[in-house]
Amino acid sequence: MKLLVDNQLPAALARFLEERGLVCRHVCDLGLDASDDRVIWELAQAEHWVIVTKDEDFTLLANRTGQTAPQVVWVRIGNCRKSVLLNAFDQALPDLIRLLEEGRTVIEMR
Figure (spheres, rainbow, N blue to C red):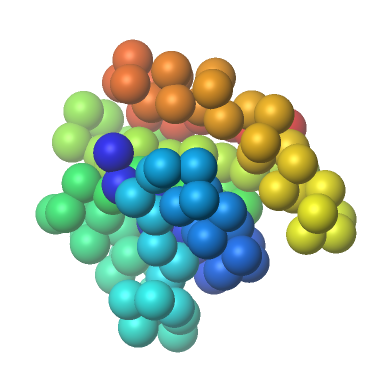
Protein backbone atom coordinates (compact mmCIF):
# COMPACT_ATOMS: atom_id res chain seq x y z
CA MET A 1 0.00 0.00 0.00
CA LYS A 2 1.36 3.40 -1.05
CA LEU A 3 -0.11 6.64 0.26
CA LEU A 4 -0.03 9.93 -1.65
CA VAL A 5 -0.75 12.99 0.50
CA ASP A 6 -2.48 15.80 -1.37
CA ASN A 7 -1.41 19.44 -1.32
CA GLN A 8 -3.99 20.62 1.23
CA LEU A 9 -2.33 18.49 3.89
CA PRO A 10 1.17 19.13 5.27
CA ALA A 11 4.23 17.29 4.02
CA ALA A 12 4.85 16.46 7.68
CA LEU A 13 1.92 14.03 7.47
CA ALA A 14 3.73 12.03 4.80
CA ARG A 15 6.88 11.89 6.97
CA PHE A 16 4.77 10.91 9.99
CA LEU A 17 3.17 8.02 8.10
CA GLU A 18 6.55 6.89 6.76
CA GLU A 19 7.88 6.78 10.33
CA ARG A 20 5.09 4.32 11.06
CA GLY A 21 6.28 1.96 8.33
CA LEU A 22 4.07 3.01 5.42
CA VAL A 23 5.24 3.94 1.94
CA CYS A 24 4.09 7.55 1.74
CA ARG A 25 4.87 10.61 -0.37
CA HIS A 26 3.54 14.13 -0.48
CA VAL A 27 2.58 15.46 -3.92
CA CYS A 28 5.44 17.99 -3.64
CA ASP A 29 7.90 15.05 -3.36
CA LEU A 30 6.78 14.00 -6.84
CA GLY A 31 6.77 17.51 -8.31
CA LEU A 32 2.97 17.55 -8.39
CA ASP A 33 2.29 20.36 -5.92
CA ALA A 34 0.95 22.65 -8.69
CA SER A 35 -0.81 19.87 -10.60
CA ASP A 36 -4.49 19.61 -11.37
CA ASP A 37 -6.49 17.01 -9.44
CA ARG A 38 -6.90 15.01 -12.65
CA VAL A 39 -3.11 14.56 -12.98
CA ILE A 40 -2.86 13.34 -9.39
CA TRP A 41 -5.85 11.04 -9.94
CA GLU A 42 -4.35 9.50 -13.08
CA LEU A 43 -1.00 8.92 -11.37
CA ALA A 44 -2.71 7.30 -8.40
CA GLN A 45 -4.76 5.11 -10.71
CA ALA A 46 -1.79 4.05 -12.85
CA GLU A 47 0.65 3.46 -9.98
CA HIS A 48 -1.79 2.21 -7.31
CA TRP A 49 -1.45 5.07 -4.84
CA VAL A 50 -4.03 5.71 -2.11
CA ILE A 51 -4.89 9.42 -2.18
CA VAL A 52 -4.99 11.10 1.25
CA THR A 53 -6.84 14.39 0.81
CA LYS A 54 -9.16 17.04 2.21
CA ASP A 55 -10.57 17.57 -1.30
CA GLU A 56 -14.06 16.18 -1.81
CA ASP A 57 -13.49 16.12 -5.59
CA PHE A 58 -11.44 12.93 -5.24
CA THR A 59 -14.30 11.19 -3.45
CA LEU A 60 -16.71 12.19 -6.19
CA LEU A 61 -14.32 10.82 -8.82
CA ALA A 62 -13.93 7.59 -6.85
CA ASN A 63 -17.68 7.10 -6.58
CA ARG A 64 -18.14 7.68 -10.32
CA THR A 65 -15.20 5.53 -11.41
CA GLY A 66 -16.11 2.43 -9.40
CA GLN A 67 -13.79 -0.57 -9.13
CA THR A 68 -10.95 0.98 -11.13
CA ALA A 69 -10.76 3.99 -8.80
CA PRO A 70 -7.79 4.59 -6.54
CA GLN A 71 -8.66 4.37 -2.89
CA VAL A 72 -9.22 7.71 -1.15
CA VAL A 73 -8.79 8.67 2.49
CA TRP A 74 -10.96 11.77 2.80
CA VAL A 75 -9.76 13.83 5.77
CA ARG A 76 -12.80 15.66 7.16
CA ILE A 77 -11.01 17.20 10.13
CA GLY A 78 -11.37 20.98 10.04
CA ASN A 79 -8.46 23.38 10.05
CA CYS A 80 -6.29 22.52 13.02
CA ARG A 81 -2.75 22.52 14.28
CA LYS A 82 -0.41 20.02 12.69
CA SER A 83 -0.01 18.25 16.04
CA VAL A 84 -3.78 17.70 16.25
CA LEU A 85 -3.85 16.28 12.71
CA LEU A 86 -0.93 13.94 13.38
CA ASN A 87 -2.51 12.76 16.63
CA ALA A 88 -5.78 12.05 14.80
CA PHE A 89 -3.89 9.93 12.25
CA ASP A 90 -1.99 8.15 15.00
CA GLN A 91 -5.28 7.19 16.65
CA ALA A 92 -7.04 6.22 13.40
CA LEU A 93 -4.17 4.44 11.66
CA PRO A 94 -5.01 0.84 12.64
CA ASP A 95 -8.60 1.26 11.41
CA LEU A 96 -7.50 3.09 8.25
CA ILE A 97 -5.08 0.31 7.36
CA ARG A 98 -7.72 -2.35 8.00
CA LEU A 99 -10.31 -0.57 5.83
CA LEU A 100 -7.80 -0.05 3.02
CA GLU A 101 -6.78 -3.70 3.15
CA GLU A 102 -10.47 -4.66 2.99
CA GLY A 103 -10.66 -2.73 -0.28
CA ARG A 104 -12.86 0.17 0.79
CA THR A 105 -12.75 2.79 -1.98
CA VAL A 106 -13.50 5.92 0.08
CA ILE A 107 -12.73 6.17 3.78
CA GLU A 108 -13.86 9.26 5.67
CA MET A 109 -11.66 10.33 8.53
CA ARG A 110 -13.35 12.65 11.02
